[in-house]
Image (cartoon, rainbow, N blue to C red):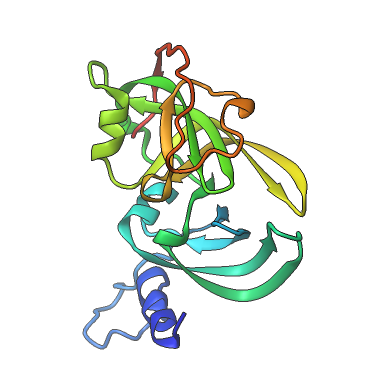
Length: 217
């Protein structure tokens, strides 16, 4: 990406040096924004690094911007598992398929009572399973369709191949990009049902059981 975009990202996602605002009064220095680790999955790479949050949760920061700047980055090719280190890597939201969240869950006072629904997501070379949270009485997939594009799933795991080997990573929370997903299916669909599935493929329907949960969505 261009250097101009990188400069804009610094302005959006980083705190400026102390004292740069000539109009700021004494004691007006803003608090430092927290950093968090993340692992991002794109169509052909696994990218790990750090990002500076400007919201309570990583998913809110991802939904609040279309471009991000990752720091202290390791990029792993899914084709041959080769890795590249970089101090900074700018990345656009439309390049993201999913992000493993390793940060705060937000203000507990803002959480609402929800039901959890097991879902399976396919996107490019990835198969993702986790629990989608929706308000009681709301159809879960309709709710996901009308929400912001970066949607967190709890108790999740992701499957993919890197360097010819199968990889499975379990995590507390994964944030999936609805806009780059091929499809989202209610129920946990087995890997054998979606092998080779693309945007036009449809898995067989699995049973859906809602369980109560409390997790802000």
